[in-house]
Length: 92
Image (cartoon, rainbow, N blue to C red):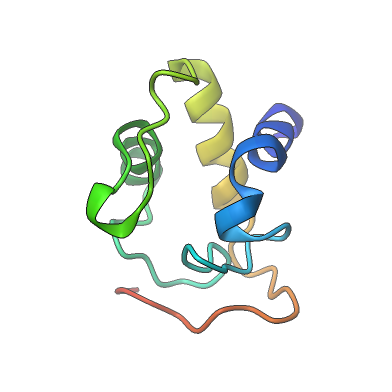
């Protein structure tokens, strides 16, 4: 998780916030997900991106192990309830 946290800080904070609270991108701490919240769906979203939502594909910059580390870190954020969390989007 430490590796995933570092990769998150380097690549994801600008859109998803320092604590996963959301910003341009969705809140990653609530139970709602736009593209599926299971580990495989999170991995796929990071790998391929979501072009129509402005999220780039990370497969050119991050290898499969790194994507797995980031996805695992993101999953660890569920329920952390950071301040200023963006309203839930998507399905539970």
